[in-house]
Length: 144
Ligand code: NI
Image 1 (cartoon, helix red, strand yellow):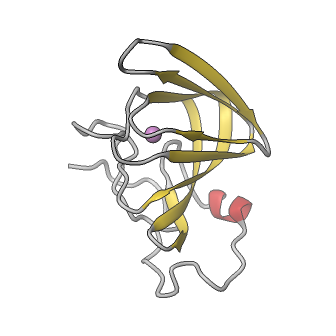
Image 2: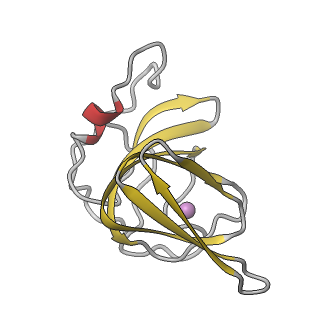
């Protein structure tokens, strides 16, 4: 149903990442492979996830939630496609930059070279968006 995780994952910690120092670079260094988001902490119903990406992801959307991308290293391109009028826009994020993709807007993150990201989104969001799961769909709530 889901691909076997190719990274070490940790059990959900009781403190859910709170009241402790979280070193994002150190967390990312524990992830093997791209497009494998791992939760590092929660704030209310939101999760902070680190991920390494490279290449073009698939077009997808999240009908019920916005999605925040913070670039920790590298250069990320996010293509947007408004479903109604087909408008296409592209933004580029570099280290220290962030963007919020609005809910309901189709988007595709692309990285020519490896990019390290922090994602902020509600618990339960599926990385490949709403609808059918694909080979890049990963199981939720995997911690590192
Ligand atoms: Ni998304």
